Image 1: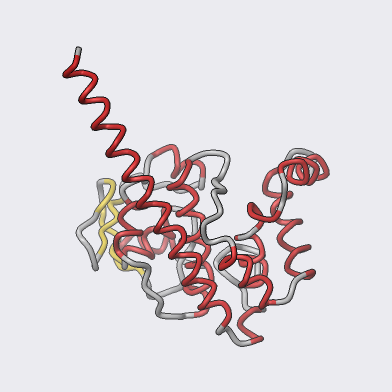
Image 2 (image 1 turned 60 degrees about the vertical axis):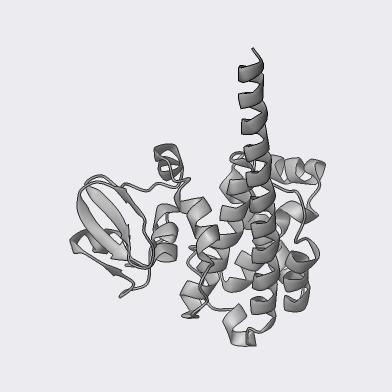
Length: 224
């Protein structure tokens, strides 16, 4: 019995240490992105992002929605959108993008670097994914060369699961994702090669700009 209890205590300790690491990664990502966003030119804020229908401005506004909207306000917005989460987030992002200056939108991220918000499903890893992927929605669209640190990418890439791919509408049937800049792959079939962070975007349902992926099936995941 003591052996079982000790094993459980060790597992709990490992899980707690992992959570601390993810929280630190989230805070660092938010601060770094806030710095990057503050340096964008006015025209870049109005450039289309990889999020269909959103400019950079809407993406950055959306990134801080969970910090600024109380639960009652969020539920109220969801009711107004007739229960459609996509419609609700789109409306809020457009409203907030118009209501706040670009310096305010950037500051929301920095000021909330340690905010405990997490998405409804997925916990801390999903919160990190939210920040990293939306940051890439901006940098990939603008052609910026920011590289997400490998330890953050590893947390997210190692957490890819079939149900997550299904949620984002990603079909990897017959495809193997192969990172060119780190030791990681996923799936089986014809290889698609690319930078690890580009493959992460692919796994989150994004279509990549031309030239960022290689391999015969890559056209399936490239912008039309």
